[in-house]
Image: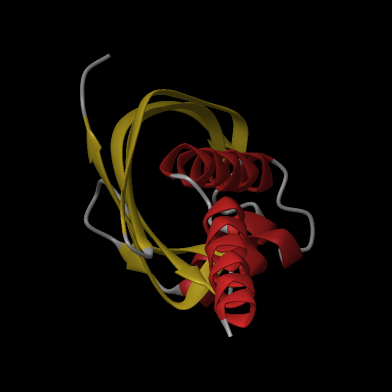
Length: 150
């Protein structure tokens, strides 16, 4: 009886150790969010057919621009794929990431060279993003931009 009880205890301890080791640490999650933000930046810079963009954002996306315009998922992707929103370069800096359960709040400075509908320009923005973890993947739920003087 003692031997069975001892084996059960050892099995439980091993199971808990394995489960804890498999769980992502806060640093791992922050890196995962940083990686998906970088993937989104690259996809905005080179949208292709929009497949990557679509995979990174939720269907319920609320994408707010500094001029007050708000786009849903379809409008956001279509604007980039069509060239209506066109980025020659995008640089992110001063990024902070805060994770609360399955939600990540990302803030950064966004500086870009644009060519929207063939019109060259520059933009400097402060960005707030809200990411949600669904089925093990981080997806953009909301984004809001405000202008600032660089």
